[in-house]
Image 1 (cartoon, chains in turn orange, green):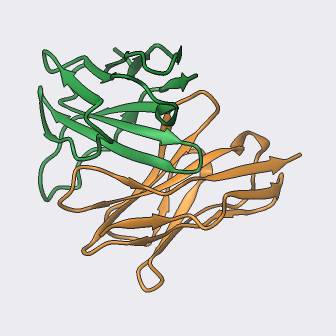
Image 2 (tube, helix red, strand yellow; image 1 turned 45 degrees about the vertical axis):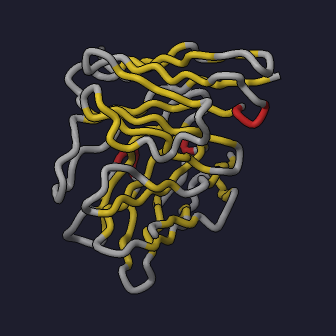
Length: 113
Length: 118
């Protein structure tokens, strides 16, 4: 069965410092991996996805994520955090033959000024 | 429309009452999904529509939950005899469609309906 784990409920980082939000996954075949962000009272917004190709994927707002097949991880990163990056981040996986996402429980990122 | 629209944005209802939540997807999006976001539970899949039919209803928690979609557009999620455990944010998403084996399209989510059952 497919699953996604986000081991941290909350991540705190100082503005200007690099940030990492962790995600590990379990799927039976080749995964499609996604990151979404949710700002207060807003729907989820797509950040980036990994389908195939380069392991380092670049997305919106300066975010990037690294696909690591051996560690079954897809951690979200940004070199320099902004206070406006504070939000709830969801990792999701979709099997190649599936139409629905399996989401992690979310990680709340707090960037401190 | 320009985005996925959900109404109402907030709903407070008494236990035992029925509620209807509405989703207006992006024009032309044939696939529509309902998810539920509960505190600490992540996003839970409820139902998937392709056009007006629902090939996957496996996530609906009980027979108190039902959903329909008409004209390949607007969808309504109905919860009958609401219970306190139904309190959550209900999110709707739409996409251009699904093709088996393809990378497919990402979802566009609405802002959700926050349901509180008191």
